[in-house]
Image 1 (cartoon, helix red, strand yellow):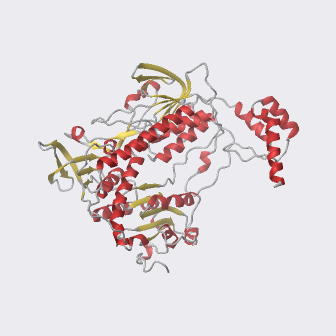
Image 2: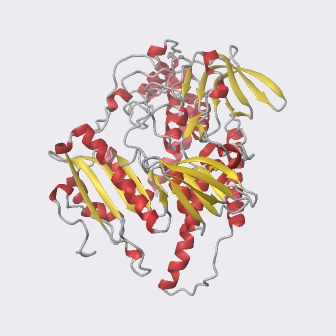
Image 3: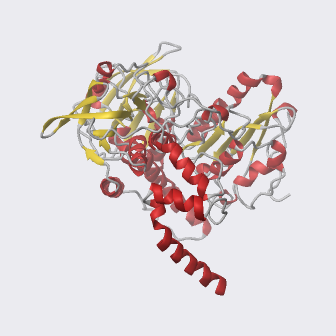
Length: 594
């Protein structure tokens, strides 16, 4: 008790006596050198530097930061200095993330309107803008949403908040609840068979939540002193942009620009596609029941939409041009498709649409063709949902005026998100060849702002990013697919541990466990480092998130199988993996508790 009281009194006295440390550089230097040299009372450190145990070292670091200057050589953005020590990792060379000294942008007050203008009010742009302000920059955020062909538009927050992750997860949850209601009868609940979803009420609830997030986001930007400009921006030159506002055009200048405009869904180039079809941009606010729906495209967006529509009682059909879940492990992808087919979601394989025509009764007549046999067919639907990929929103930016080059409607950047123009950067879904995921965009945006204005030198690590496909039976993964592991290490250098399992909660309602499966793709010899983890089953995202951290930390098969699992859970099945594909043994479990 007395020690606690002494600590409190010391803290108050210290703050009162030496508050000028934080406001006066000269006073701070004097106090630090005379009073606390080599003292270990407090620990100050930079975000990316080894921890320092003296206040004197902290002041030296601050002086060092103050001397950092802007670099305009695009080949040397960030400055080159002595290499820092980076943590080692078996799957990526993290030394390259730390091998440059930080380059801190000097303030441009009096020269430009802003230190930084972020173009795009989505996850990447907002994260970058707010982080830059916290590090002392004057920031504006340009944001504008072009309405879809049927007139859908939304507020600040980007795809994730408005027409992506958030509404998708909410509708996925609604469909799971529908299943759970019917399963509850097997657990002894008295359930009315007439229970059914109300589409308009669901849409209203989802949209109300989205609007609340829009409001909170606007308030957050105001509180953090980020100027929000609701306008469509286009470049005049590398330091100047014109924003089209409701009130007229406004010219904006900035020392640095960050492009974070993301992407929008594509429409196929066939008759009636734009006039009669919708995309995920429209689905979550659709003012009528989707009814019988043709989902064209078998990427994760298409499968997720088809999945929750089925769970809500509608009739989706998935049209697949080539393969399911391109870019994912193909064994797992086919298991996902099979699990959906088992639930009554038909797949039209090797098929492409030819045209969409609206009939007198309001139905949509879709003509299509099998690309292997050449056979043509047709069917009528209430809704046609295009999920055939996304394109980067570079058209309106007039990037050529600033000298920024593009590639396949995306922007190529280096390891520091720098474009070919020294003062223009890009983050998020607009950059070429990186995972188009919200958490990736958020972290990349923050790290970029810290490098520009916070004295950091840490770069984004785009390897081993975990993700989840929210199909009815969810699929989550992190690391390499089995195919990519074989490409990188050879078939003889890869061992695959796998197994089927039976979730305890599936037993009483007698739910199918046929496709509950997981595998670990690993090094065959040595420490047997884990290259990738794949899981198909309930709450997949919650299961794989923790394992993602383990994999990035150098997880091995020996560590995995010697970890005691939590019982009874599905996540523990990773700790029970013992059968390899190479052995040819049956991976189906005989019992659950031994």
